[in-house]
Length: 136
Ligand code: AMP
Image (cartoon, rainbow, N blue to C red; front, side):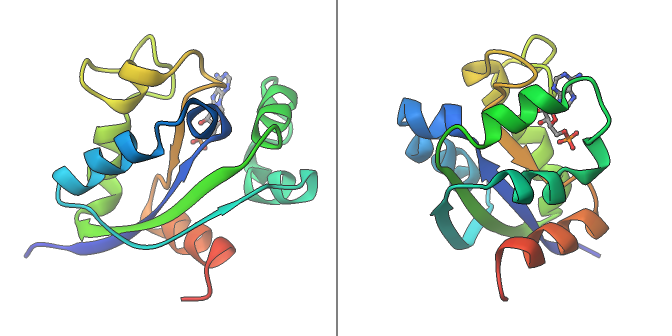
């Protein structure tokens, strides 16, 4: 049976400052993922710590923190068949150098830190991350 899912997507500060929110959203919509809610906001250090808690002891956390608070982000709930997996396919590998051609990170990413976009990686993280940013 086809599984309709919701997932959380974050367009990160690098993409917002480059003016490519529209280009990224077009990719979701043309792939059958609907944006069912969206907002722009600026994260605080406490929010980054909470949201990326699993990474707080990793070597890249300082860079991730500085980057994620460096400017506004655009957060969305995407909905569609197998939305969690589909969104991750469209995004591409965390490391833009390893991402497949035609993915968002291949086209727009600069590094593992400046990698344009975040997407939930499982049903449980989608649930947590959606509830973190939205009341629906
Ligand atoms: P993830 O929870 O896997 O989406 O990772 C969250 C974010 O942490 C990624 O989107 C990157 O911005 C950052 N990140 C993950 N792995 C690395 C890494 N090896 N080097 C630098 N940043 C990383």
